[in-house]
Image (cartoon, rainbow, N blue to C red; front, side, top):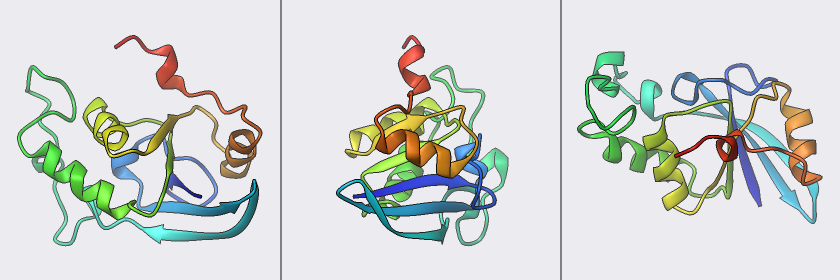
Length: 137
């Protein structure tokens, strides 16, 4: 199994999925971490050519954050970038991205934990709370 944690610096969980430049990837077999590495993001704000904030998000839409024109195409590209992963952990993300990742079969966990290693340990112990479960949709 591979777990991707969104991060700005490799040691803390990023609180904004779309603005984090890296994924920290954990390769796990039988609840044992076998390999850990940083993967640069190549989508969203980090796409080749760079996307400016007003191009990526349409905050004016009545549908909500992450549902603007073209959002599903951008999210599909992000899903492809994580096609070898089964779990995605972040501090926060828009509902459009969250729903697209979930629809693609990723287990998405939003957490307020900051330390990546503690977050992974909690996940492996079955104790990582998903803050999305507390939201009403």
